[in-house]
Structures are given as structure tokens and as C-alpha cells.
Image 1 (cartoon, rainbow, N blue to C red):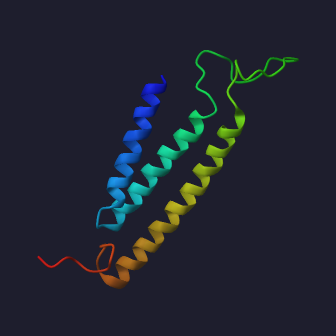
Image 2 (cartoon, helix red, strand yellow; image 1 turned 90 degrees about the horizontal axis):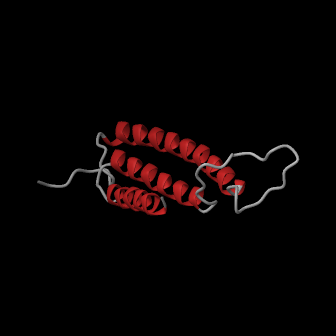
Image 3 (cartoon, rainbow, N blue to C red; image 1 turned 135 degrees about the horizontal axis):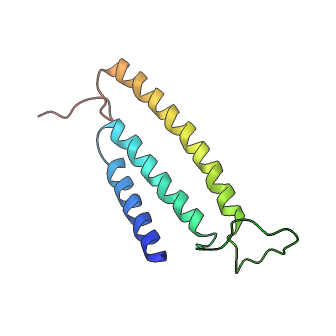
Length: 114
């Protein structure tokens, strides 16, 4: 299970970095989103990957990290998802404004000479 999650994190991070280095602003925004998803999965996996255990404590039970996942990374990821959504919305508004002003969606504001 850890190998699959590690592979997913690596693929998302690699794809995100590759897209961030592209010359179009929409590709940069998608790359930032993929990179934030990779970081979120990494933070989520630090809480422990447990399969087949109940997500909450039984009434009167005592918490044991050997049996349950740590809730702090889950709360951090939930907050990071909300912040990532707001940041992506802001980037899209800036992208549309820049496209309207410059007439292109190239990162530096002008097309390469062919």
C-alpha cells in the first residue's frame, strides 16, 4: 500500500513540476494544482495508512495510534484543500485579466518568435 501511495505522490509531483515549467499560464495553474494534490496526499499519508479499522473510537474506548490514524494530518489536509481551491480561483481570475490585457496566455506576456 505504501508503495502505491508513494508512486502516486511521485507521479503527481513530477507531472506538476513539468507543467509548472510550461510556457502557458493555464498549464502552470494545472501544475500547481497537481503539486498541491501531491503534497496533500503526502501529508495525509504521514498520519498512517490503516486498512480495515474503524475511523472513530468506540464509546468509552481509549485512542491508540497503533490501531487508529492520526487525526491532525487529516485536519491539515482539509484546510489545505480549502486554501488550494481559493488560490486556484484567484489564479484563474488573474489569468483571465492578464489574457484580456495582453491578448495572450503566455507566461511572460508575449509569444516566442517563430
